Image (cartoon, rainbow, N blue to C red; front, side):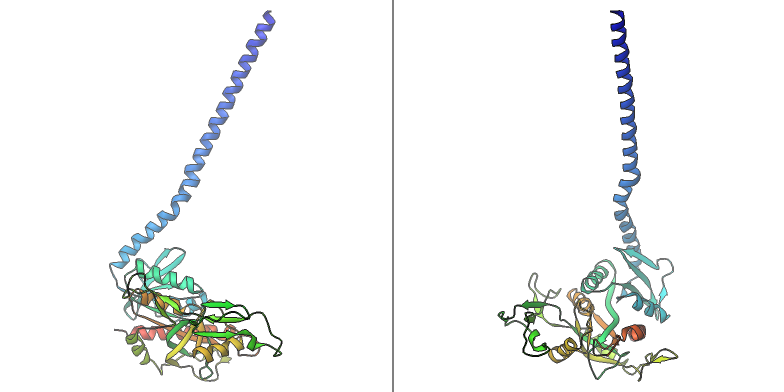
Length: 354
């Protein structure tokens, strides 16, 4: 009997010790989890808002010295071309503001206060960066610049153009025998490009539509239908004074354009989320819309800026022939030159801007 009681007591003690050990391990595990929560997860959750709050605080300080001219370009090569002009002088105390993954640079050009950002490729990036700049910073207007494809046979690579831009990427892609929309501003019958002719295809018809434009000066929730958005008239007139300015002709001592580039004001440009490197589509754009260039951002920047009631201009350097060339696209050779010419035109525009 004694042995049984002793065995029962020993077993109870063992269970109690085991329970205590388990409880200690559970407690230790809970402590580790709590520490991980406060050391890793919680800071990570609050890092983004705190970082944004810091940037917004700096923006508030920078805005006290405004207003600024907002400058938007697109790619890293255009970024490099802008700084290669040597005209940008960074702000002494707040030269850089990082916000939403973009780097805004504060400084001066020709003693005029500017705010510069590289928006990224495409209409969404262009519109988002423009709206962000207009909403958060004290700006008095937007100057957009970069490179574009040349679809005008009277122009050459290296030329810089400015005036109005249309979004040629709003499509109704219909069936072969689909009903055409009477509201289309233009139509592209894919079958007319058959090679050889007469074989037909199922790609059908592409119908081009207009933008819905909401404006600070319009009625709320009522859109104006339009195709072309034009840069601000008084800025275009000012830019016209730059025609005849000296633009870069050579990439280096062994690679030059056959003639000196020029700045032209008063031409149309097509914008869509498409890099055009196709001769047939290039010809269609010229014949149908009367454009001289094609890019992926300009209409979005111009439309967004005008929608908010600010002046805007877009200057685009022609970097290639948008598919008319034989062989390699000229952008690889002359893209940097076209970007530099556009940036140089912007610098000169800022110089004469009152």
